Amino acid sequence: MKKLVSILSLLILVIQVQCQPKTQPQPQDKLPRVIILATGGTIAGAGAASDRAGYTAGKIPIDDLIGTIPTVKKIANISGEQIASVGSQDMTVEIWKKLAIRANEIFAKNEADAIVVTHGTDTQEETAYFLDLVIPSDKPVVLTGSMRPATAISADGPKNLYDAITVAVHPETKGRGVLVSFNEGIFDAREVMKMSTTKTNAFDAPNTGAIGQAYDGRVEYYSNAVREVNPPKPIVLKADTKLPRVDIVYMYADAPADQIDFLISKKVDGIVIAGVGNGNFNKAYMDAVKRAVAAGIIVCRASRAPSGRVVLHDEINDEELGTIVSDDLTPQKARVLLMLALTRTKDKKQLQEIFFTY
Image: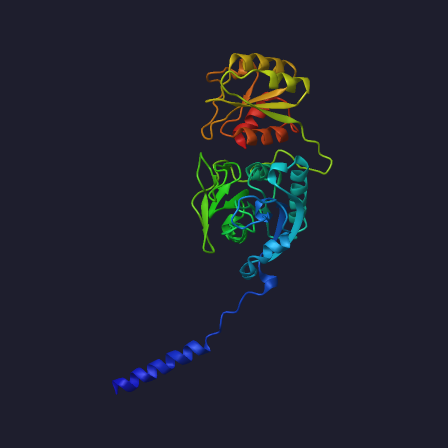
């Protein structure tokens, strides 16, 4: 009798399972819409041999890159646009503007739910921060790239691109500003920095660390950005927007002031000093900075050290000298912010507040 009851129970269970509606794959038109804006870089690079480091960046079109990760079609409706085809050492302000204008257009016209930008690694952190400052939408924008060209053994591009798309469509990514997804780490655009010349784990955030992780199709966030998420943007870019010229001067032992004097002669709008330690520089630089300030040039003290912040009115009296500080921005990101901030104001107090806010 017990055996009969067991058989009947098993039959009922089988019937129940068979009668349950089967889960169907989500229709393509119901998936999140992601537009990939491609700029070239190593992720689109091609080399003569799979076992050699040499390659040419930006050779492979975005549609071919998307073709390397066919399973991504299960999680997103993907399309691609080629904005540029350059190695990121050749990234320009004009390409930045083109990227930003197109991204803002995509969101304004509701053409996509998220954007992924493929980009070379050399200046990826600068582009990410620039876009973070000029894209007001809370929809996700995620940058990625690779350290190995598409033709290399164990190319990391397809995995990084898949992860970036996974991050872009994740519900918790919305409202976090521009992010960089690389080697399974998720980084805030303001904090991320390239830390290695060749290794696949090239990116980190020295001051804050990664804010999350993308692994095996899963996205986990550990923290929010240090600064306010999506603060008011300093500028709305247009095609005819002309950004001020800001240059970086590197400080080192016994450095002469020739570069600063040259930039004064060029009548640049701003100079960022990649100083030693706490944004310090020698007497030759000190005298040259005074000349630059007298010429109406905004001078920002940053540090060549990869972490820490430059303190206002510390070893150098910024109020007396007429300088501002980058806070904990790297020199290259201080340049980006100063370029944009100068389109709003040249008042040093207001500029300093911008550096403490963004």
